Length: 96
Image 1 (cartoon, rainbow, N blue to C red):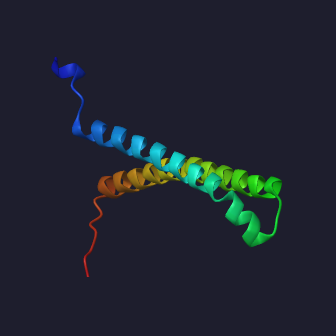
Image 2: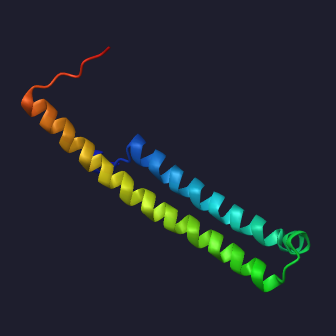
């Protein structure tokens, strides 16, 4: 294997994190489906409503994942620009 195709440790950690998140997502979805009868009895609602609640939950989680990825990227850019400006102007961070 040449050096240009070697997988770095950071890439391996990223791959592992994505695989773990996919597994946890499937596990949560499956466990929610298994609890349908209990949810129906506890909340005194129909199967249709429990399915809609589950769908809403999963959509909310998906939207939060997308939003957090965008916000993380946005704030990394902002912090990088701030650090560059600080270094350019010669500012020192004072420790108290």
